[in-house]
Image (cartoon, rainbow, N blue to C red):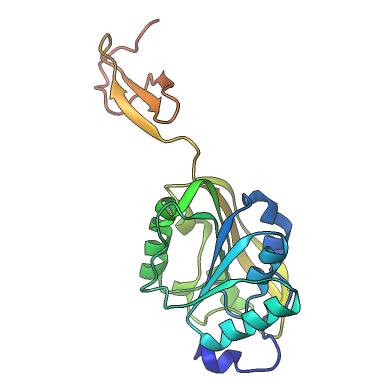
Length: 238
Protein backbone atom coordinates (compact mmCIF):
# COMPACT_ATOMS: atom_id res chain seq x y z
CA UNK A 1 0.00 0.00 0.00
CA UNK A 2 2.69 2.51 1.03
CA UNK A 3 4.88 1.81 -2.00
CA UNK A 4 1.91 2.59 -4.19
CA UNK A 5 1.03 5.70 -2.22
CA UNK A 6 4.58 7.08 -2.38
CA UNK A 7 4.99 6.21 -6.07
CA UNK A 8 4.60 9.81 -7.16
CA UNK A 9 6.94 12.50 -8.39
CA UNK A 10 5.59 14.80 -5.69
CA UNK A 11 6.22 14.37 -1.98
CA UNK A 12 2.70 13.62 -0.80
CA UNK A 13 3.41 14.93 2.73
CA UNK A 14 5.58 17.76 1.46
CA UNK A 15 9.31 18.39 1.69
CA UNK A 16 9.18 20.63 4.76
CA UNK A 17 9.40 19.22 8.29
CA UNK A 18 6.49 18.75 10.62
CA UNK A 19 5.78 22.05 12.39
CA UNK A 20 5.83 20.63 15.91
CA UNK A 21 9.22 19.03 15.24
CA UNK A 22 10.63 22.17 13.65
CA UNK A 23 9.60 24.24 16.67
CA UNK A 24 10.94 21.80 19.27
CA UNK A 25 13.88 19.91 17.76
CA UNK A 26 16.32 21.77 20.02
CA UNK A 27 14.95 19.81 22.97
CA UNK A 28 16.70 16.78 21.49
CA UNK A 29 20.38 16.38 22.48
CA UNK A 30 22.77 16.49 19.53
CA UNK A 31 23.66 12.97 18.48
CA UNK A 32 21.88 9.96 17.01
CA UNK A 33 18.18 10.25 16.19
CA UNK A 34 15.77 7.57 14.99
CA UNK A 35 12.72 8.54 12.91
CA UNK A 36 9.94 5.95 13.05
CA UNK A 37 7.76 5.43 9.99
CA UNK A 38 9.67 8.19 8.25
CA UNK A 39 8.21 7.71 4.77
CA UNK A 40 9.60 10.21 2.26
CA UNK A 41 12.16 11.67 4.65
CA UNK A 42 11.12 15.27 5.26
CA UNK A 43 11.71 15.13 9.02
CA UNK A 44 14.87 13.03 8.82
CA UNK A 45 16.41 15.40 6.29
CA UNK A 46 15.47 18.42 8.39
CA UNK A 47 17.19 16.94 11.45
CA UNK A 48 20.26 16.04 9.40
CA UNK A 49 20.44 19.66 8.27
CA UNK A 50 20.52 20.67 11.95
CA UNK A 51 23.57 18.46 12.56
CA UNK A 52 22.00 15.24 13.85
CA UNK A 53 23.08 11.74 12.87
CA UNK A 54 19.75 10.49 11.57
CA UNK A 55 18.39 7.02 10.88
CA UNK A 56 15.05 6.68 9.08
CA UNK A 57 13.11 3.43 9.26
CA UNK A 58 10.09 2.70 7.10
CA UNK A 59 8.15 -0.15 5.54
CA UNK A 60 8.27 1.43 2.08
CA UNK A 61 11.36 1.18 -0.12
CA UNK A 62 9.80 3.72 -2.48
CA UNK A 63 9.45 6.21 0.33
CA UNK A 64 13.02 5.68 1.51
CA UNK A 65 14.41 6.17 -2.00
CA UNK A 66 12.62 9.51 -2.11
CA UNK A 67 14.09 10.29 1.31
CA UNK A 68 17.60 9.67 -0.02
CA UNK A 69 16.93 11.97 -2.99
CA UNK A 70 15.66 14.70 -0.67
CA UNK A 71 18.79 14.34 1.46
CA UNK A 72 20.99 14.68 -1.61
CA UNK A 73 19.05 17.75 -2.67
CA UNK A 74 19.89 19.41 0.65
CA UNK A 75 23.49 18.21 0.77
CA UNK A 76 23.13 15.91 3.78
CA UNK A 77 23.12 12.17 4.35
CA UNK A 78 20.76 9.96 6.34
CA UNK A 79 20.81 6.26 7.17
CA UNK A 80 17.80 4.40 5.79
CA UNK A 81 16.50 1.07 7.07
CA UNK A 82 13.79 -0.80 5.19
CA UNK A 83 11.88 -2.64 7.91
CA UNK A 84 8.45 -3.37 9.31
CA UNK A 85 8.21 -1.81 12.78
CA UNK A 86 6.55 -5.04 13.88
CA UNK A 87 9.96 -6.71 13.64
CA UNK A 88 12.30 -3.74 14.15
CA UNK A 89 14.57 -3.69 17.21
CA UNK A 90 14.96 -0.21 18.67
CA UNK A 91 18.22 -1.27 20.31
CA UNK A 92 19.61 -0.56 23.76
CA UNK A 93 21.01 2.78 24.98
CA UNK A 94 21.40 3.78 21.36
CA UNK A 95 19.49 6.98 20.59
CA UNK A 96 19.68 10.58 21.74
CA UNK A 97 16.26 11.10 20.21
CA UNK A 98 13.39 9.06 18.79
CA UNK A 99 10.83 10.79 16.57
CA UNK A 100 7.28 9.63 15.84
CA UNK A 101 5.42 11.95 13.49
CA UNK A 102 2.00 10.68 12.42
CA UNK A 103 3.32 7.14 12.78
CA UNK A 104 0.00 5.37 13.19
CA UNK A 105 0.24 1.62 13.78
CA UNK A 106 -2.01 -0.97 15.44
CA UNK A 107 -2.35 -0.37 19.20
CA UNK A 108 -0.53 -3.56 20.24
CA UNK A 109 2.52 -2.59 18.17
CA UNK A 110 2.38 1.02 19.37
CA UNK A 111 2.35 -0.06 23.02
CA UNK A 112 5.30 -2.37 22.45
CA UNK A 113 7.30 0.38 20.76
CA UNK A 114 6.52 2.78 23.59
CA UNK A 115 7.43 0.15 26.20
CA UNK A 116 10.90 -0.11 24.63
CA UNK A 117 11.62 3.63 24.56
CA UNK A 118 13.29 3.73 27.97
CA UNK A 119 15.63 0.92 26.97
CA UNK A 120 16.40 2.36 23.53
CA UNK A 121 16.99 5.99 24.55
CA UNK A 122 20.20 7.10 26.18
CA UNK A 123 19.95 8.86 29.55
CA UNK A 124 18.61 12.32 28.80
CA UNK A 125 17.38 11.17 25.39
CA UNK A 126 14.12 12.66 24.10
CA UNK A 127 11.02 11.13 22.55
CA UNK A 128 9.02 13.57 20.41
CA UNK A 129 5.63 12.69 18.96
CA UNK A 130 2.73 14.17 17.08
CA UNK A 131 -0.24 12.06 16.06
CA UNK A 132 -3.90 12.38 15.25
CA UNK A 133 -6.55 11.77 17.92
CA UNK A 134 -9.84 9.94 17.22
CA UNK A 135 -11.53 13.34 16.78
CA UNK A 136 -9.57 13.60 13.53
CA UNK A 137 -12.14 11.29 11.94
CA UNK A 138 -14.57 14.23 12.07
CA UNK A 139 -12.21 16.36 9.97
CA UNK A 140 -11.17 13.84 7.30
CA UNK A 141 -8.02 15.85 6.45
CA UNK A 142 -5.50 13.03 6.86
CA UNK A 143 -4.55 10.10 9.04
CA UNK A 144 -5.78 6.51 9.25
CA UNK A 145 -9.47 5.73 8.69
CA UNK A 146 -9.91 3.90 12.01
CA UNK A 147 -9.92 5.28 15.55
CA UNK A 148 -7.92 2.42 17.08
CA UNK A 149 -4.77 3.58 15.29
CA UNK A 150 -5.16 7.14 16.58
CA UNK A 151 -3.60 8.28 19.86
CA UNK A 152 -4.75 10.33 22.81
CA UNK A 153 -3.32 12.14 25.81
CA UNK A 154 -4.79 9.56 28.18
CA UNK A 155 -3.31 6.63 26.23
CA UNK A 156 0.13 8.22 26.05
CA UNK A 157 0.09 8.97 29.79
CA UNK A 158 -0.26 5.22 30.33
CA UNK A 159 2.19 4.12 27.64
CA UNK A 160 5.06 6.52 28.41
CA UNK A 161 5.33 5.66 32.10
CA UNK A 162 9.07 4.97 31.87
CA UNK A 163 9.76 8.50 30.66
CA UNK A 164 9.51 11.94 32.24
CA UNK A 165 6.77 13.75 30.32
CA UNK A 166 7.72 17.39 29.79
CA UNK A 167 4.84 18.25 27.44
CA UNK A 168 1.66 16.40 26.53
CA UNK A 169 -1.38 18.12 25.03
CA UNK A 170 -4.32 17.52 22.73
CA UNK A 171 -5.24 20.42 20.47
CA UNK A 172 -6.71 21.41 17.15
CA UNK A 173 -4.45 23.06 14.59
CA UNK A 174 -4.05 23.56 10.86
CA UNK A 175 -1.85 20.77 9.48
CA UNK A 176 -0.53 21.79 6.07
CA UNK A 177 1.84 19.04 4.93
CA UNK A 178 1.63 18.19 1.25
CA UNK A 179 -1.52 16.89 -0.40
CA UNK A 180 -2.32 14.21 2.19
CA UNK A 181 -2.25 16.34 5.37
CA UNK A 182 -4.08 19.54 4.52
CA UNK A 183 -6.61 21.26 6.73
CA UNK A 184 -7.80 21.49 10.30
CA UNK A 185 -6.63 18.57 12.39
CA UNK A 186 -7.09 17.14 15.89
CA UNK A 187 -3.68 16.13 17.24
CA UNK A 188 -1.84 15.07 20.34
CA UNK A 189 1.74 16.27 20.91
CA UNK A 190 4.30 14.90 23.33
CA UNK A 191 7.87 15.52 24.45
CA UNK A 192 9.24 13.04 26.99
CA UNK A 193 12.71 12.48 28.41
CA UNK A 194 14.52 9.38 29.60
CA UNK A 195 15.50 10.56 33.11
CA UNK A 196 19.15 11.28 33.80
CA UNK A 197 18.88 9.71 37.25
CA UNK A 198 17.83 6.16 37.93
CA UNK A 199 16.19 5.57 41.30
CA UNK A 200 16.59 2.57 43.56
CA UNK A 201 14.64 1.85 46.72
CA UNK A 202 16.55 0.58 49.74
CA UNK A 203 15.78 0.26 53.43
CA UNK A 204 17.49 2.31 56.13
CA UNK A 205 19.16 0.17 58.77
CA UNK A 206 18.40 2.65 61.54
CA UNK A 207 14.80 3.22 60.54
CA UNK A 208 11.78 1.26 59.30
CA UNK A 209 11.30 3.74 56.43
CA UNK A 210 12.70 3.25 52.98
CA UNK A 211 15.01 5.47 51.00
CA UNK A 212 15.09 6.53 47.35
CA UNK A 213 18.68 6.45 46.16
CA UNK A 214 20.05 7.89 42.93
CA UNK A 215 22.01 5.00 41.46
CA UNK A 216 24.41 7.29 39.59
CA UNK A 217 25.14 9.75 42.38
CA UNK A 218 24.63 7.72 45.54
CA UNK A 219 22.49 10.48 47.04
CA UNK A 220 18.93 10.06 48.13
CA UNK A 221 16.01 11.19 50.17
CA UNK A 222 13.68 9.46 52.58
CA UNK A 223 10.00 9.13 51.78
CA UNK A 224 7.48 9.76 54.56
CA UNK A 225 4.75 8.09 52.53
CA UNK A 226 6.66 5.07 51.25
CA UNK A 227 4.30 2.55 49.70
CA UNK A 228 6.65 -0.24 50.70
CA UNK A 229 6.18 0.56 54.39
CA UNK A 230 3.18 -0.33 56.51
CA UNK A 231 0.87 2.66 57.14
CA UNK A 232 1.37 2.29 60.91
CA UNK A 233 5.12 2.89 60.74
CA UNK A 234 6.03 6.37 61.85
CA UNK A 235 8.21 8.53 59.57
CA UNK A 236 11.86 8.89 60.42
CA UNK A 237 12.79 11.95 62.46
CA UNK A 238 16.32 13.30 61.82
